[in-house]
Image 1 (cartoon, one colour):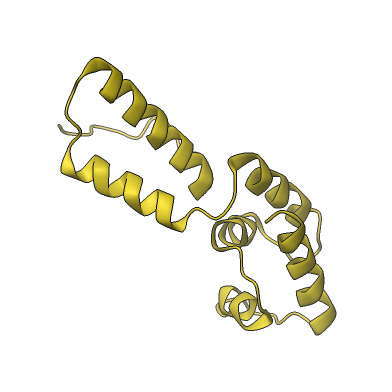
Image 2 (image 1 turned 30 degrees about the vertical axis):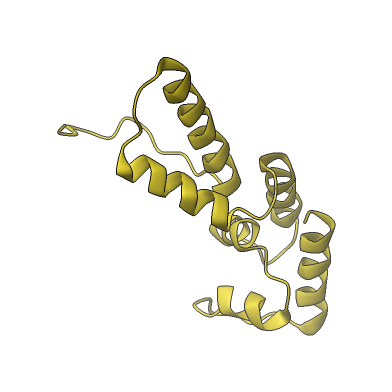
Length: 116
């Protein structure tokens, strides 16, 4: 199958992708169709890495975007990875031109823990 052009682009969270893949899996199983190797591996990967529900992850992104030094792509990375320590959070910010204070890191970690 050749893709001729991209119609649209939308950012989604890993937990949202997991729910979409599970819906595809259920429809394939109900129809009696066999799932491809790629689809099975994608579902396995999403199940393994998804750490929270789609609703909680989307709420976390909304609250993170209200903070001052959070861009949309970083908010999505934080919601996908759900860091638990300051070092994990610093790794997400490693490519940014600014650093966060300890208080800012703790504020973000508190938000993550409330949505875990």
